[in-house]
Length: 406
Image (tube, rainbow, N blue to C red; front, side, top):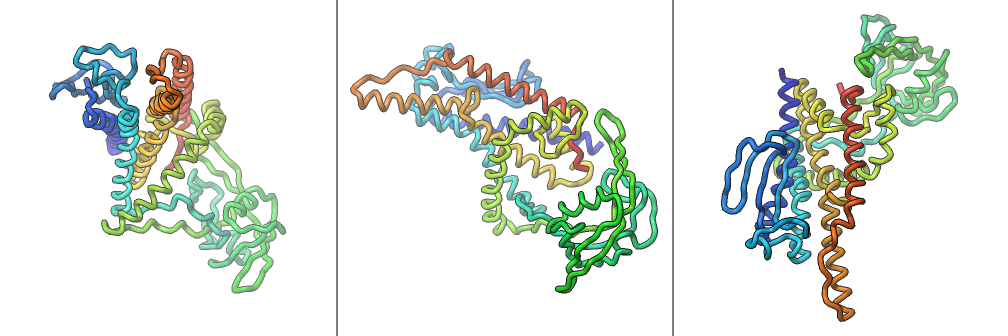
């Protein structure tokens, strides 16, 4: 029950995030003298609406976002006599830019507020964690069968291969079979693929020790794509590395500056994710065609809602909030991409008209008319087609081979 409520709650939060984005456009348009005809949450048939002043507000049947209808967004928009002078495309470029920028800005504002909530309630995670060092935190016995989390699926007794080899908590592994290592991520694959005894160089109390560990073969069973079960063979030694530090909670006063710093880190991380989107297509296709689903591949609204539901089911509300924060920052930055039909595309048109007319005035010419959007339609259709195909690909991947965080 909590999973279903979590999925529904996250989906509603996403719809409200998009509606909040549209609120930015609406409020900025009203403040700069433009006419907002309609503001609706959702698409499709109208469920309920009311008129306040000159704007109709309401809800539609398909809860897939929302929209703000500003009179005269393009020269092809049909206008009533009272809308002629207030058409958006006739306004000064700075006004149009303010209205267009207000939407993404709302996502950033909401994201920042949620970051403050996260800082006070659960603490802020480290977006750039240092690699886990190759330091022994603990040793344990190894069962012949493990679950998908790497935990013993059946009881086991004894010291385990790592302890039997002489490894102790606090030891630092500096080499594996003569190969220098510094990170746990370098040690694990070398031990997991070993076919026999492994020579370890270990630093303990300033002394270098040479130890030999013999990994135990284990079978790891877990869920696979399309409801199947996967089985992997691996070598284990019963070794744990230091756990990452627990996020520090903040008081409200200290949470604000910490959230400002974290917001800057979120912008950087979101920009990197946005820039790398085209490189993820191959990984998504691999996931759809039966390969392994990488945890850093993009997710759809459905996939995000499922993860949100799983977070609620397990009481991991910080993951619920963190995912919502990430999506708001992504929505904000993605909409600033200078391609139609995104906000950034309309901003690019407004900026072009301003620069063009400034140059014309300096040349003694009159200002030209508005940009002919029809000439930009082939490019716009191309962008829409690419975005639509990418969304379908992520949705299919989330349905048949979802990302597993738990």
